[in-house]
Length: 456
Image 1 (spheres, helix red, strand yellow):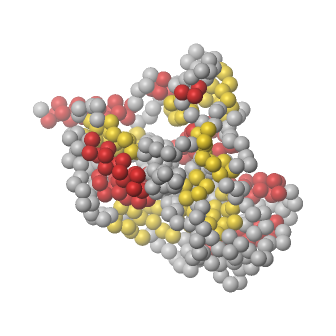
Image 2 (cartoon, rainbow, N blue to C red; image 1 turned 90 degrees about the vertical axis):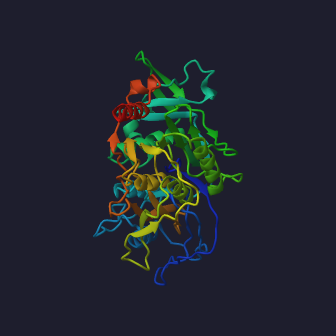
């Protein structure tokens, strides 16, 4: 499916497989043969298959005709559209003839619609890259949380605990390189932090950002030039266990898109790693399922995680699809098949945060509805949506339109732009990051000690 990234890039790998188009446009649409594809990756969290129609034989004759075509696509496919939906009018008068100015105007107009999953892409093949720097939000500050050894030789390199004051000269909360920024703090946090760490870029473009302005613990600032490298997906670790604490085990999920040998998402690899990790935690009386940095698109891995943790037949996913052939679509419940594997006998806790997006949010929404599971941390990203991508007939840009939305089980409360809020909200400060403290873990351990004392 989607988030996602730009998330845009950072949430998506540009991986396409072309098959026969199952959703042709209606006959009266002059652009019914415009290429239609579904992307796989964070930007389209739950796409499992891709589609394409024939390349158009009668392309739009102008940018103006293409704008009208976009308006029709939004009318048919945009699931988050307000009712009534105002016409899509990105320009005062005729669109500019310049392709770059036209793209800029389209993207701004799409941003103004307020849906982060509705966006324009260049349509070029993309490469997944990472900077070796992971940042996290601590209150209102963006703080460096982890640094790759590639920066060790730099005297002025990034240090854990450094505060990111500017990104390519702009404040983190207003950085234009992140694309459309939402108003909700948790969603904005995820988008900006994720784009600094990892993204996908067309082969003809350079990664952004180029530089970070950092402030150290003494208040001194310095410039850091990021070193982007291609992601090595030969042997990804998507699920791991931490069994060092005798009273509390940790199941750490970092990516539902666990890539196989060919670089594509591999549910089998995810399930193999999950099985091994759960086996290492089988004797733990309490287990924390850490989803704070779990992005990715693969719903099969997410469903398998839900099965292994809550082995009961329940509604685990609730979703609604916008389809031109079924304009009055309603939410549909997806039951959870009973797992053939015995569940963990442990008491379960779930850690959430803005790094949980896409498929992670679907499984988080399910787990937090279980009365026996307590969730801690911060709100998730609110970027769970499935999109379709249409290749525009004149500019050849790709337009992603969200056509499937997800809700909390047993309700019509959408995850879109809301995310999942934990039962116990815990804020991480910049000083916590500098000192290597994890307030969520510390709070949970204190709760376990208190429960132990009360039982005696």
